[in-house]
Amino acid sequence: MDLLIKNGTLVSSSGKYKADISVVNGVISEIGKNLIPDKATKVVDATGKLVLPGAIDLHTHLAMPFGGTVSADDYFAGTRAAVCGGTTTVFDFALQDFNESILDTVKRRDAICAPDAACDYAFHVGIKDLSNGLLTTMDDAVKFGVPTFKAFMVYDFGVQDGDLFRLLEHSKKIGARVSVHAENRDAIAVLTKRFLEEGKTSAWYHYMSRPEWVEEEADIRAINFAKALGAPLYIVHVGSKGGIEAIERAKKEGVEVYAETCPQYLEFTSDVYKRTDARDFVCSPPMKGKKSKDALWRAINMGVVDTVATDHCPFQKTEKDWGKDDFTKIPNGCAGVENMYPYMLSEANKGKTTIETVVKLCSENPAKLSGCKKKGFLKPGYDADIVIYDPKLDFTITNEKMHSDCDHTIWEGKKLKGYPVMTFSRGRLVYENGEFKGERGWGKMVKRSLK
Ligand code: DUC
Ligand code: ZN
Ligand code: ZN
Image 1 (cartoon, rainbow, N blue to C red):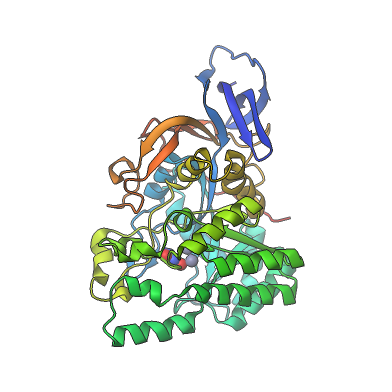
Image 2: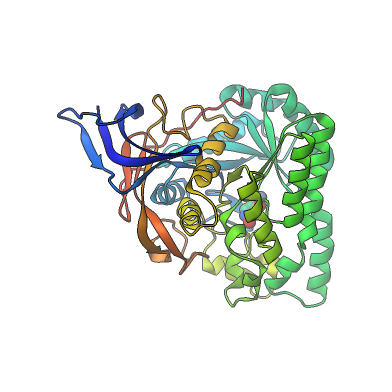
């Protein structure tokens, strides 16, 4: 036995119970009462602590070329930040190049990621080009262990509706799943042009150019395609009341549609775009009004939201400042990978939801939906990706305490009730009491199957 975590309270979506966990070769070997260590075993006393499966963040953009620059966290900084917040598996979006086979996209990004990753990782492929037979190169990616793809319904590099339709149709045939960034590209373009012409250039108009219905409309369009084709659909970063209600209706009708939301939509509202540091909050979709925030919390507690992920995509202050006089020049995205699990658990401690629900949304469901067969649960045979969490530890987020390479955080000053004290990645200690203890290159790619 390599590691024994004693006297903790284990949490799963179905409840809490007191037990010890033993780990051999990075895998959970036994869960039970009064397990006996041998001489070489590292013993951790988790009395008074919760023992949780590491979170799985299904949505990050590390080292991503975007908005005229590259996101501030490379694969090392992003995964270092992840484990320091109790996230032990990170999904990144590998963006296809034009004229590139989809498997080549995965291999190109893995060549950068593998030497750097401090925790386990996986890729979704962001699709740009399905011309000249590239659609069927999805098949090789699925065989390789990458069965999840993303279509951007916005941005100039995103796909048009015809290609979204083809993607959904093909994904169904090959046992894959498509996710969508759902916003109405054309409406945003009209409004953006109009605001700029009228001299309305502040970050507030980033929000105004993407009114709440812009997301809902695209959600409904994607759902209609999925329904017509009988294909599964995953909608990333749902932030609007109309959107989540459309998803709820579709689920009731039997459409296989999954909803992801992010902590920033649960914490902030569009009021942030009136602040002096509004540019730091610019991401797409933008934060919405209070009614949307409330609807998302309701949906979490009604079981309509399937996963919580971060859309971690930070940019430095100087880069955000490019948009001082023109909101379209602000690189879109915020840091969040280190904040997701602590924030969600803290909100549970404050009574917004339950700890069990947080484990389900941040760990169990992401593992199940992404086809990570050995992650997301504290069970014998599963990877020992484990977080020891002190529910009584008060923590105030400051950028100084964070482990990202970004020079600011939208979470500055947020007071949390409870915080992780240790994170283990496949049985190896990677975080303890504020300090990163892991190593560059420790992380392995998780090959997956949706079957
Ligand atoms: N939205 C962001 O805010 N950043 C990265 C990509 C995206 O869709
Ligand atoms: Zn997106
Ligand atoms: Zn994203």
